[in-house]
Amino acid sequence: MHPTTPFTRRTAALLAGVLLALLAGCGSGGTTTEAGVTRAAAPPDRHRKAAASGQLPGMPPVLDPEDVYAADRPGMFSPTVKGFPSRIYVPNTNSNTVSVIDPKTYKVIETVPVGAQPQHVVPSWDLKTLWVNNNRGHTLTPIDPATGAAGRPVDVHDPYNLYFTPNGKYAIVMASLDRELVFRDPHTMETKKTEPVSCYGVNHADFSADGRYFIVSCEFSGELLKVDTEKMKVIGQQRLPFKGAMPQDVKLSPDGRTFYIADMIAHGMWVLDGEKFTRPTLLPTGKGAHGLYISRDSKEMYIPNRGEGSVSVFDFRRNKLAKKWWLPDGGSPDMGGVSNDGKVLWLSGRYHSEVYAIDTRTGRQLARIPVGSGPHGLAVYPQPGRYSLGHTGIFR
Image 1: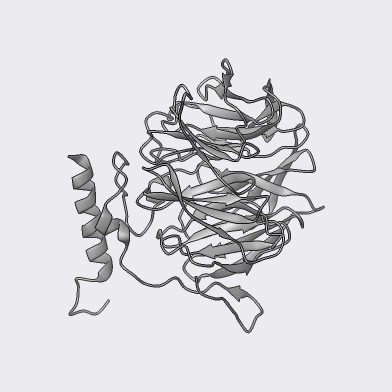
Image 2: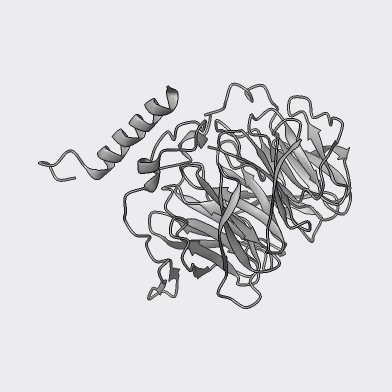
């Protein structure tokens, strides 16, 4: 910082964030370094449209305009979840069960029967319920995270994945085979609006910093959608520039400028300017890149590479891949989440009927836990954060 210019751009951004909070209360190419590490092109430094247009009505104000995950630090629990026991909930797609793991002992302490083909365990927007997405059973099974008890299933057709609008107004069912985005009441799951899509395999998403739009991956046709949150309407669509592309998890960068999309066939993650929705660039990470998870300090992102049994670590400040961790004896790391204190990365082993616990400081495998067949979108719960956007736990 220059000693004669204390009023920096960051100061101005923080003041803008405070103003927004008060109001709410009433792609470029990549390069390769000499070490052979691919570096993503830096996003353009521009004023955020969020500051000009305002946030989605009813959305909790962003705490820090430079970090959308500022509410996710260790110990920053919502009062809603403070009494919940710490557990790992693992949906076993082929066994039609959820394995419940005690993270202190690395042991399965309960197996909960659910509907056919459970894909993900999804925390509700208000943090009070875990929804098990029984894709082929066409139901959502609610689990009470205070007791671990499963409730009566709710009829919902083709619930491959589940998200919530940032204001908590709607649940969004990713109806993959139906080729629909279905906006529902977040509590009763009554349908409010159905948005048909022309792509195949809608499955994962994340929202812009202001909540005004979200980016959706279409797994089977290699496409991306841009959807207006308030209008509940697709406003952009593009095919990824890679033959056979199969996009998976989607995650917004801490500064809100960039979307990352894992791709298990392109073996890396796409770097996308969500505002412009221009052609993204590919950053190779490893074979079968699948999930994307932010560290508790918002400095790194963990990318499990399902096809090679590794986890790549992306450094946001340096804007490059910093390291890669390999699982001993291989494996198929898939979906998961970070522990409450940020010290452990939990991932399902999709093709090995197991769950991996990985030390986020060293990359060392802490445990390899047998579970049911086809473990998929496991949820670490509870986690810090004010509300959930869905999937296995996107908290802000």
